[in-house]
Length: 58
Picture 1: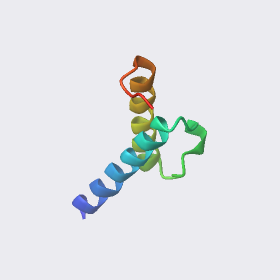
Picture 2: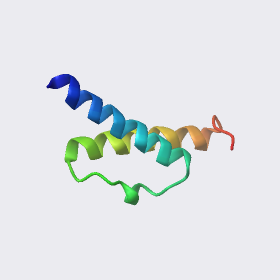
Picture 3: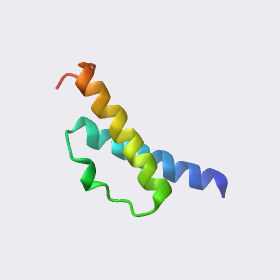
Picture 4: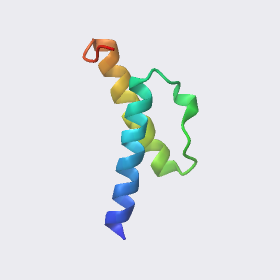
């Protein structure tokens, strides 16, 4: 069970990262669960930071 939960949270982080790279707003987070929302926002934040520093070029 713990592995399944971790996989869901990692998927939320990946989706958040992809949203951040695409320039989407953090207000568009699709998760209501606090844990998943936190992971999504963490991924989003990482991607936005990388974009701001110029690591990702579109």
